[in-house]
Image (cartoon, rainbow, N blue to C red; front, side, top):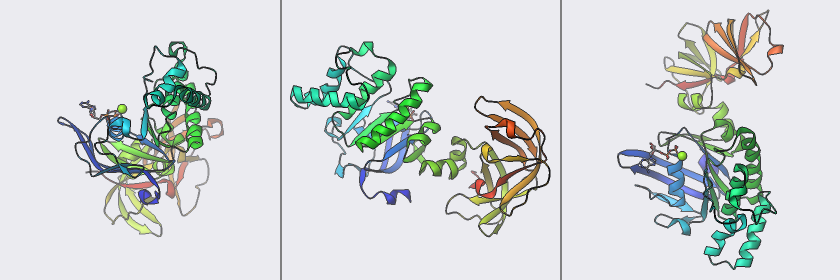
Length: 367
Ligand code: ADP
Ligand code: MG
């Protein structure tokens, strides 16, 4: 799968399990991150994201592990300071009594780097995070965004092979968070360092990552590119987490070329595509996932097309969401949600709704 594409692994994790007493925080997690990759660990609160990061950094010793390597070297049992990675935390964890420059150079000084060299490197790191000239400032005189930049400068100054970031933008307001997302991606490209980035926000994951690991209760639910997660969810859980608004229950009736025909519980038959590399036998119970923004209302003649699903539909409700509006439609395929960013161009009344078969992801029903 995706893992085989990694030719130069920077991080290799094989079958890690971690328990806190009776709680299993991670179960049989295996993962490879490439050199210079931006890998995001996505998942809801309590899914094991921080535990995974703490195991990589060495702050936590896994209950069971087959392999844990950084840059090709075994790090099982190696203390955090001897591992070639650094963590950036959400709460910055800066030293309040030190100046900005001292905060950043500290890590080098304790490693025995001569003071002047450490200062020079710290100034360069400050430039990199666009805080040139802030050397003498006290940490208490900085805004939240500036503190986070200092924390990042402090982490990159030691030139780690892997930078671990645990929801680093979580405490910032939305506008600043969006700016910092772009800055972090630019920084990652510039440094060409492997970033392992934790977030619970699917938007953030989609906007920043080369690949995304979606966690669920301590296990990897899906691993893939942002495109895979957004357009090719591999389970009902992934589809829901990634914001597929419409889920229709039915059973497979037949295969027609590339398309799989599904009879919905109301009797309507629609065409879809199975989630990757899967074929469903006729009679299999399935869920069909469809993004609200892929459904189009149509007024007048019934649209035609072999890979187009068309059902009769009428508007029953509409909700203003600011950037977009959600329209609820009563259809022969059940109640569907349509999402529109351009309400003005939608017909006031409509006769049908349509969507492409490729946008219908057929997923196994979970028992
Ligand atoms: P996330 O970062 O995704 O929110 P965590 O890795 O922090 O998740 O937690 C995973 C699970 O392990 C949760 O059920 C959490 O309550 C539990 N957990 C985390 N840290 C500890 C701890 N120090 N002691 C006991 N349970 C913990
Ligand atoms: Mg966490």
